[in-house]
Image (cartoon, rainbow, N blue to C red; front, side, top):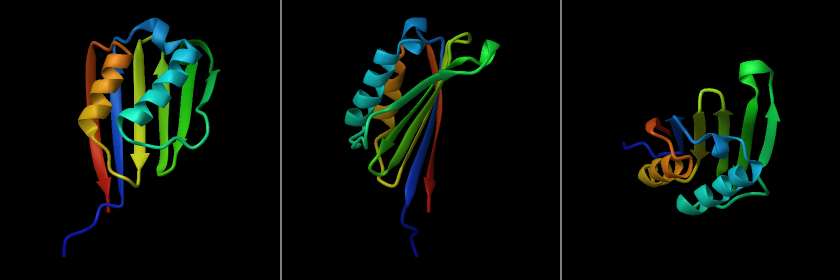
Length: 118
């Protein structure tokens, strides 16, 4: 018996991103909205964007609820890194998610993992 996919989780790590994109709340809000469009997800409310932490750990984190779960993002402005997790009960195109994310943050390097939940 073939198992049916219940959910998809994609973790994207971006390296050597453009600093100004990691530190601008308006651009971060735009990223959430455009990522949802790119991977055919429906946002549920507006993205929650907060900057907190201390020292090297201070930076922005975002959460965008989507109708089928959520997108969470943690940014490292000192290391110029972005960590993006997309979880959805509806499958989505991993190539679109990774290409859009890398392009938006102008990352020089990317790695990612995709998992299916059964």
